[in-house]
Image (cartoon, rainbow, N blue to C red; front, side, top):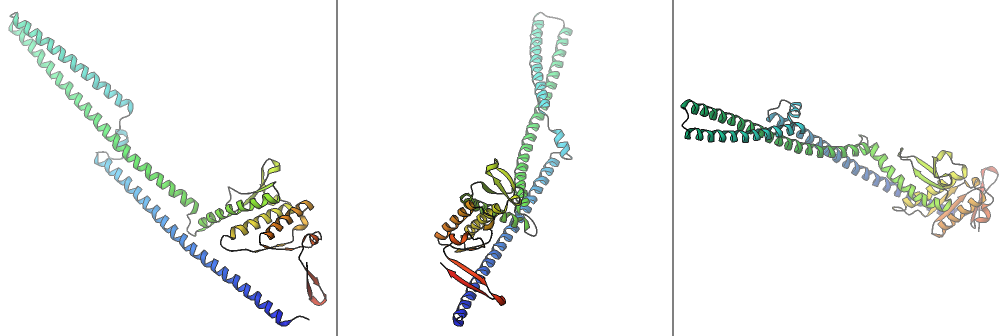
Length: 349
């Protein structure tokens, strides 16, 4: 009773549609391969830059050790020990101040002795008394010279100490900058660096999954405000469910009932449709079973959501044995099984 030509046209149309889908899938596959090549190139560039930073860090460290040797130190430990502590520096400054005070005191005594010498000359004292005074003046001058030498020596030590402190601060600043760069690249390597690209693939997939969760929660809020989907922060590709009626209790997806699982799955499917629609127009949605686990109120809510999708231009197909759906759906396709493995299709509405 069938029209063979009509059947042949339908089959040709179906084959053409499948070929178009196959061609689109090939194009997507080519895009993914191109993107993977770009990411591999980026990875190689990042690894090269990390190696350059490590080489620069080693060169800075070698230069630091060379500078230490040039200053007359055998190793870094000797250089560190040679740097005066704040307390030692204060003690040296205090000693320098005391030496200066002693110098002033010595000069004062020397002047007093000169005055005394003049006074003695004026009083025509004995010659040997004058010689004693002159000897004292010589000794005082000698002491003054020693004090000045000590002051100069300590001042030079202080200047050397300040110079070494400045050089050490400059080297430490360069080392800190290199450490910051090295730490940043280490973190990036920990996130996406692996020889087979697995880490980067999981990282990229986790970003896409986070976007999918956001889109799915928009639809889930319309279906049932009680639940929210959450990406597991400890596992890149695992989802959790938040029960707002239980003080935002977080639990595994495995604990959902049949009806809850259907709502969450429908929200994820709609979110996936929104996510894919950025590159490909998805004008149809087919749902196979799952309605039998819903209570009457939830079933009406789901049907309302699907009706809104249909009103937005999408073709929504439902495959179900639930009797309550017959009245809710206007256009129906009935499949009747006959004897001998033959079935008939009847369209109504």
